[in-house]
Image (tube, rainbow, N blue to C red; front, side, top):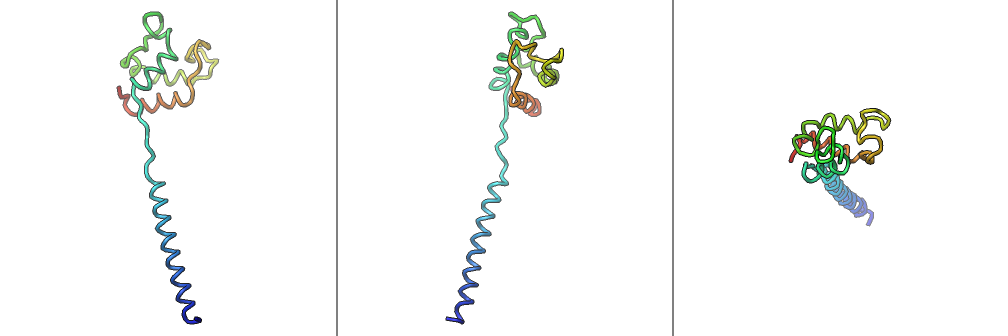
Length: 122
């Protein structure tokens, strides 16, 4: 038994090491896979946000401000939109104007930025 014990220990060590290595490889490759990067579109994500946060002031039928009710208008003004929604709430240029609508959330601002960086898909 004395002669077999070192061989048995070595064999068990080898099996354990092999199992742990393959398990770590599987775990690490799964965690290194790219996380799904959501893409946002004007129709699905941006237009509803604009309607909820920018109407009636920026929607022509009842608004008297720069129209932001179309893809073209929103895309053309996206830099200004992102800039204004990030201003301090007491700043004159802050939007949405003076508590007429709730401020955009961090998530909503991130959606606008991602939409812009993705070349503003319709």
